[in-house]
Length: 262
Image (cartoon, rainbow, N blue to C red; front, side, top):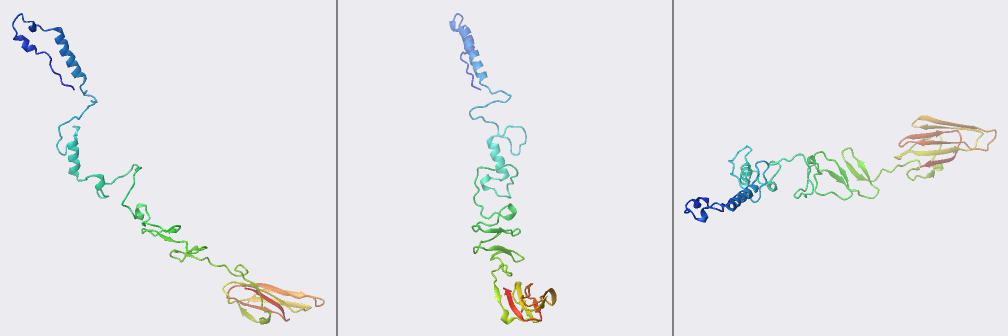
């Protein structure tokens, strides 16, 4: 509220002698005073939702006051000091817990290895193009690509980068047919010493009636028989022998041709 300053000293008029023109109270003087009073009243702050200008002050409330009394900046500063929390720039998780809300438009510095329990990786760097592996509550591990063509391979405990297992046998691994006629004979047991299955194809010499009985690990798996009125054809068999298995072809005739795929 602006200050009201009285323009006319009405009390002084009382001491003036009769007939003095200054003793008369003029309407203009009264109007001037009322105008000044109205102007001062118009600049006041209302009791209901007052709007202050300048730098208003208020009595400082005592420490620990918890009422509807106005809190000055001096009171607020003292209350923060009494709590000992300082400023946000000096806080740690033991002093201030912030929950809820959204933080945006800020950058966080000073954090390098955010723990897994806090939603981080536990690592400050990761190898480029590496596959990430969980490691419980510890920092995650990674597996680099390694040699071109490698695959992830489990050893029962973790994963490693390793060359894929080559599938072999029956032509899948580049096997070829080999003529072993000179080293094979009927009614004799042989062993597939390779780590993959092989294929065996054999035929007898010409006969009007011939047969081949095939065994793998002593179990008969095939029987082939031919009957001709005259010799003019050859009988044969084809079997697959698993890795490490024994195999035997029984026949009464001689070996015409014996081929093995390995």
